[in-house]
Image (cartoon, rainbow, N blue to C red; front, side):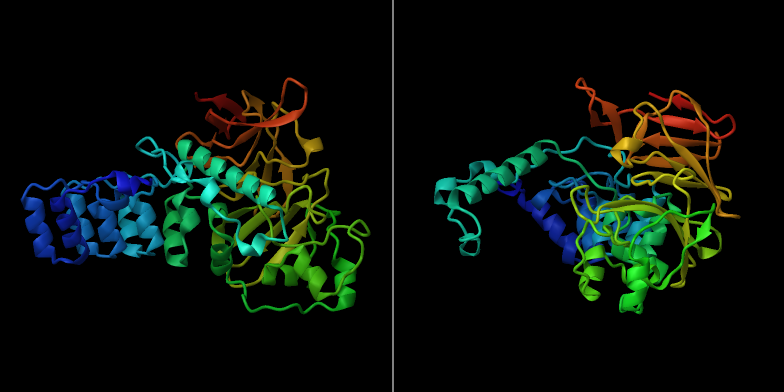
Length: 429
């Protein structure tokens, strides 16, 4: 039984929500004057403001907001009014809600609701294995997989989480509103980043087989920085290609371990930072997981001009180690790179790596810091606090040594600030 079947919506609420969806502005005004609860919940936990945003109606949205509609309320699946505006690509609605300072998916105003996906009431004995799975796995394997999936859904429902609203954006106009509000561009979808950078979705490989063989493998730079543009790497960025695509295109049947990884631009955990003159700076990132033959963590920097062109810079490993799931915070003409996961052998529990990328020269240098550091933090958030001249760090994961002296990841529950005048860390809570 899902949440919808548990809720009985009163007829007057149904009528009110129908007016919001399809009635006139005058009818909505009349309904509000009758004393109806502007935040009353209807089907699937939607309220009037969410319905107006789904309808992309700016006048009704404004009337509801001025009548007391709470934009931070959530539906049965913890989606807010902002999520609905984003899903409809409703620019006016997104702009209004961001101007009102609503939560953007980082610090929900209200406790998250547990979600009942209805899987605990399923009768597994009556569910038959789909025909397309027969011959691929046994009935027992399928049932075990099915039950594991359902158990995971129950767990997700009991311990719900939300994503930042910027993750669901799918137009450059709305994306720029989030960037103006202070969101991290790195959180946007790969498709949105490509649109913003004006990369060519119709691009094809231009590199020759000889150029592929010459440049297929990743390598570190020999200077700080070294220009590393070449035909194959440029193709991979334009295409957004992964290693498998390149191997297929160039009919590369070479064993994975000889010569190994193929350089690619399809990455997780890289940062992308807007800088002056409409440019964007991408740092590092990883391709695939550790068990994949093409798994690799990069330490390069790609500078995009925002018009479809770019340049690739490399760095010596001892100057700037491979990094992924770090943060990149622009302060004046400097990008501060904080934390990161890296390879297991790089991780130093209790220590927080900080690097400084100068956008005037593109040189990178390590920054020595002191104080109460977050530790080896990754997949976190960072924001510049101009009044304090400090970078605040929160959320994410900490790499620690467990009781067996093995590396483990735990949630970071604290907030920290790095003072950019003294370069001293301070724990806030």
